[in-house]
Length: 110
Image (cartoon, rainbow, N blue to C red):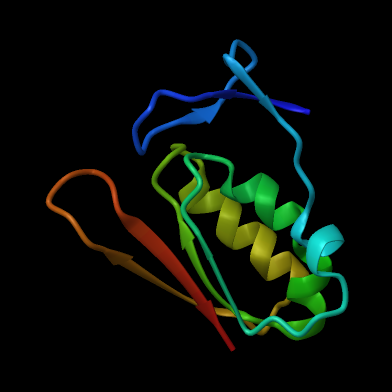
């Protein structure tokens, strides 16, 4: 179970003091051996944790990735390092889609 602060808007997030409990599964558990060709994540700061739960899919299928890297200050560094350690052949591209300090996406492709 994971505590989740549901703020009734697009910026809900995981929190130890969350007002809602949710059960979670990793993508590796949910999708198993199915072939995955593309993964997109914008999950309010939980991208690295979700990638950890997708590592077998990423290593086996090498999908194209579009991952938000603006929710936590260290995501810009930690997420590419994590992905590169899984599959060294990934190449990275970063795009920013707003005048505000949000909507920065890391693309990983082979």
